[in-house]
Amino acid sequence: MAGYPELNFCPQCGGPLEDREAYGRVRRYCPACDLIIFRDPKVAAGVVVEEEGRVLLIQRGEHTIRQGLWSIPAGFVEYDEDPATTAVRECREETGLEVELTGLLDVIPGGGSKGEASFLIVYQGRITGGRLAAGDDADRAGFFPPDDLPPLAFGSTRRALERWRRQRRCEEE
Ligand SMILES: [Zn+2]
Image (cartoon, rainbow, N blue to C red; front, side):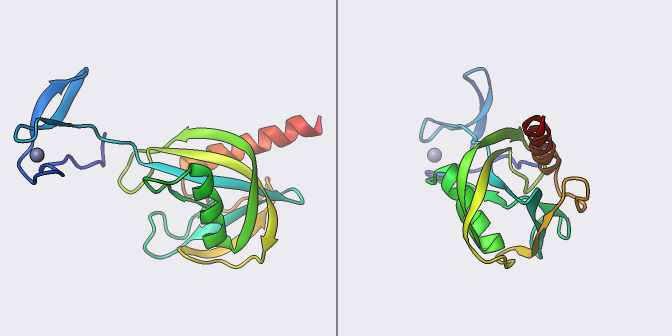
């Protein structure tokens, strides 16, 4: 996939890797360890938090891709972390707000470009505590009405919010 650099050296022994056909596609292979390298997708998790009809968004700060644009609180899932924990943690770090997850909204493929997740798991949540204050890699955090959103950072953000809007319309009907 574009933007994902190929591995050149074995993560186990440091030896040079070669290409080998295995399990239906060409994969990197270490002849010294007899090890096939399976690349894993980069997974992110985030949360759509609604309060009084408005949605919680953060403005992406320095050292992030798409700096200055807005997204839902989200971040990469650590290799040993439950994605639900990631979503709650990222929301706390980026907005100061404690949330309780109430359901799964969507699983969205990412753009696949450098620094972007392969896919994003989006939960819905409600605020249980904390105080709104941007933190970590967010410059600002705030609530926006569905018809007046700021410039969004990712296609996945747009899709998550579209999904949220559709769901709200269904609930109003
Ligand atoms: Zn090796």
